[in-house]
Amino acid sequence: MNDAHLHLIVNHFPIIGTILGLGILVTGIIIKNNSVKNTAYALFVVAAVFAFFSMATGEGAEEIVEDMPNIGKHIIHEHEEMAENLALVLYLLGILSVIGIYFNLKNKAKANLISFLILTIAIVGAILAQITGTTGGEIRHTEIRNNTNHS
Image (tube, rainbow, N blue to C red; front, side, top):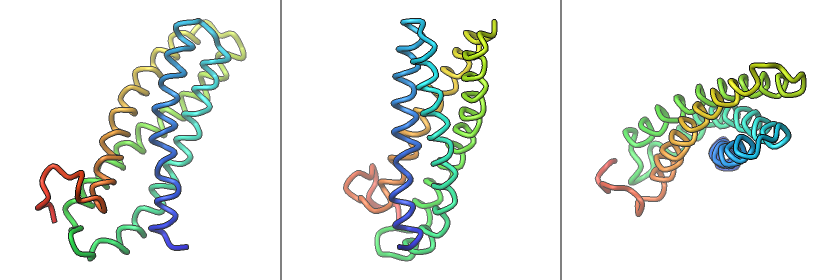
């Protein structure tokens, strides 16, 4: 198993985890249930961990595919830039989620404030996740590219 294969295995978790976590967090905020919020926070932590693994395998995957026909360095670079931004947001989201879990378990007064901060960052993360997933998909799936002459 090479880095390209490993990257394909782990790269979906940050995207799916962020999007699912966002939906669960919104639900937890609406129904005012800390257990539901903590579930979302746990998903954000998992998404951050898998973002780390995605970044760790991305460079090796790039080396394997960058010289393949119809790929090109430009399209990989675009994906890499988006992935770096997403990873930073998810690392922040993961750290704040650990704090959010702690605040909820200790019934801290700032627990609601942090849930709205996490919600805001999760929305940014979900947007970046969608863009990162699309730019990653475009590397090998030429049929989803807006401009098929990106190579």
